[in-house]
Image 1 (cartoon, one colour):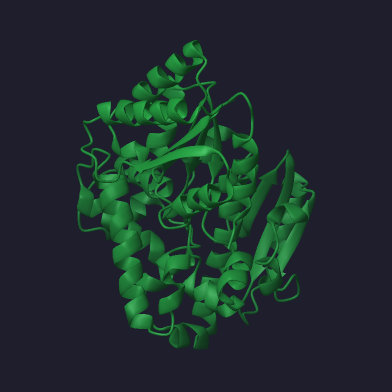
Image 2 (cartoon, rainbow, N blue to C red):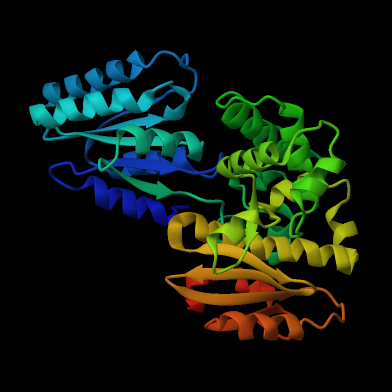
Length: 396
């Protein structure tokens, strides 16, 4: 299956002469490398594809070597341009400085080496881009697979998507749930934490970070004070440390902390976060219960559905298309607030058979902020199965 980002990449790399460095980033195992391999299969352009996954982190000279190989291929083939693709580039210390040097050298010498770099650590990629490569790059974000994509590629039902999530590499294992859970924990959770966070950032309390992930996964869809969370964790720390670790988990494509919607930025940052898992596989794989057990418990299943809707909205916003919040004032609440192109939509999720009246919360939010609309997802509103099929921008 071809994801939409392939068309964008192909169009940008057709530019002559070369224009910008193309940066592809996103969580682990969602198809970044597959995307460039699909590009390679379809393009008639000369290319050189390498990965830094097993290269010593201090060997930034390796980047210069690969660039020289690309230049040599360009000369030998007497071509007008060549595409140099470097996967997992964030593993190399000070990679951006070396890239800047080689890119600017080619600019001066009028050599058309078109560069594509891939990485799974958003923080490290963005740090390098903003420090050294400002004005020289365009980015392409690849997020977790949507329900529509998993349905098209693997015939996932809406129930399967809410439980098994959007990791294409795990789809073949869903008939053996215990095996699937073990695979998710090892291939995605442990790999993301150990390789994308612990190896590439200074973490003084790794056990605290892992405990935060476990706790946030369990409470996905719920608003939790970080101070209260500290009281539940074995490894003591402070709120600032927890906030930093939550940011790292977000950058690795695992879990986010949504902020309370407010017209004041200071109030947003000071609010208690609402934990939101980014891929439902992460929540289900950490659960000690089976799909059947959760599904038969309507209250619990409602929490899974709400998290799935939140993940769908969050991954839309990760493309740079909007911002996602929650809203609560005393006992009045709106599950999600989506801000997109200066427009505002409130979303209330009703997935279970509970009789809780959320009308007062919706009315209070409407009176306070005058959103463009407030939508109910689930019972008495848009069926959540239908909502997951559509791009959130369709609501505006």
